[in-house]
Image (tube, rainbow, N blue to C red; front, top):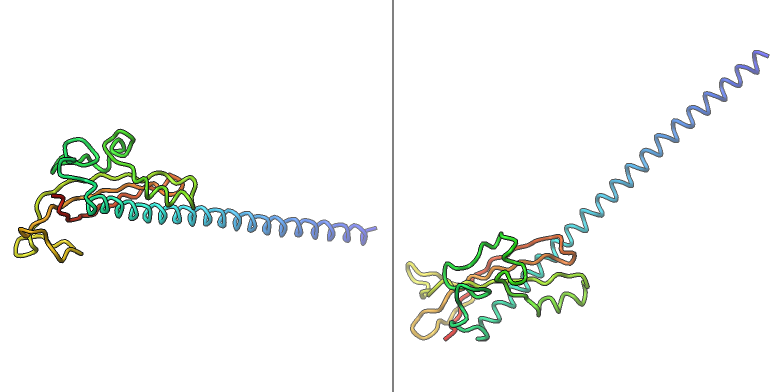
Length: 185
């Protein structure tokens, strides 16, 4: 009888060892699944941030086009948005600046391009602040990249453009600031 009792103990020990190995393997599998889920979320977040940045760049180009094509005139600049006189632009880090009616303008052309691929894409918004005359790039002047020809009289108006985009999901804020020179006469 004792031989049979020793055999049962060995079978019980085998069962316990098997259960412990199964527990360890299960914990490793759960840990790997959690890590994979976290990595998926991180990649999704980075992708949304990249989309927000690209949308903001596109909206910046849209605002520059408004200035370059003469769709905005000097009379459009005031203390009210989205076209502000020098020193009148609101704080770009204030949430209210970017709300509808908060003094910013929707970059609808940009949104219309992006919403075809990302149906939940939020509408980027921008403000433009007139910063004054820009010299010919000589001593004490400011040279604006991309502008080889200056308006008659050797001066152009400088503009500060601030754009905010929230990406495809609305969870990634990107604020860009650019400077542009144009002759809006």
